[in-house]
Amino acid sequence: QVLVGYIDPLLSRILECFKKYQESNLHTLFDLVGTLARVYGQPFGQHKYLKALVPDMIHYWSKLDMGNYGLFPLLECLSAIARVSGKNFAPYAKVMFPQCLKLIAKNLSALKSFRSQLEAKHSNGQRDENILSNSEFQRFEGANAIICCIELAG
Image 1 (cartoon, one colour):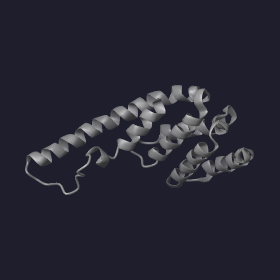
Image 2 (tube, one colour):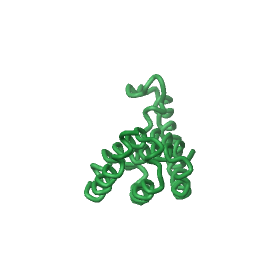
Image 3 (tube, rainbow, N blue to C red):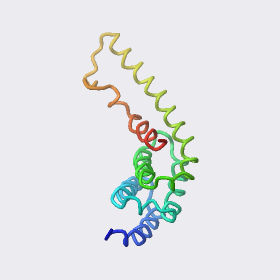
């Protein structure tokens, strides 16, 4: 409750940072916004805050390559915002849902290829020291994107 009074000045500074930060530093800003959403909870999910933040984030997402390093922090941030926003997030979900489906499909296709490569290595008698004993999925780079998209789409 005490922190709620600081949302407006914090968001004002964050929006300034979005204009100034370059792509390599935006992941830190996305982490900050996601953390603030988790800390503030429902007050952070008000229409005025969503209107200030989310359209620029969606625009940034549309410019990113699906394999870009900055995509994962962005997806985590949007998931945190969606979680605390509830029904207020619905207008943005309509735009993001198709993007989530595309990203999931792309990464599932890449996962299939990844598994085929691992199976080919093992069938030739080669031993790959990098294979994790607990799960091949943990080694797959697109796993986090799939998980975040499922969470965000849900």
